Picture 1 (tube, rainbow, N blue to C red):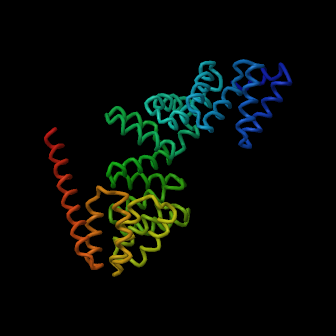
Picture 2 (cartoon, rainbow, N blue to C red):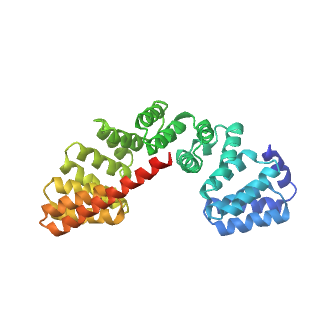
Length: 332
């Protein structure tokens, strides 16, 4: 409907039409400064021009000015033009701004008006929204609201990841397999299922992660999870190259250092294991299991005094964990 209104507006003058086309071309080529100036000029010539308002919002969103983008999309919605496009863009901007409570009704309205919207089929966007929203609102109503948005292969993929985060591995596996059965081809789908299978200690984990790595060799989660699966299967020499590759791709994650350190220790290389486990401890200083493995490595490396310090840290952390558990029980 708004396309008809836009065409009528553009017939009034060649200048706004030319400006609008030039601004669209600038936007398509990533020249956001020129696009912004062009759309603003169109709006000066033709106030409330829906295409200019909508695309000016896109410029603001792509340049990280989410408040301004949201204002533009709401202005389009207020004009009752370009509603479906504005809703989708508004939902994306609210998620990027991390305004998840305000994003929920926008997603719900979008689902009612345009259930095939790309925003509702973008699993990464839906996962980011659903995960953050559910962390903030843990009620049954919140879970039901989010579940109503998750449909089809994308919805099942998101459900898989949410269930995995909650430690519900059976539910996660079922949702991931359902997404695959529905033709899901999302980049992280095989990785997500592989991670679930690793957590379940399933012999199918390595097979699934092989598919993930074949699909995207630069996926650090797939490389890491494959290393963990092989290490859990008693194959440290096979696990090490995957963990090393994961570390190259993402050097920030403590778990990669931890499992690679364990692999080196299992291979009888404590001198190589110690620095890896030290880095894991630096990155995650509250994980008792890291200090335990570090203590083992230090003993094997002939450093009993340092091993004693690591094991003392294990006792301190476990005592803190017990106290935290006791406090939680007292609250109930």
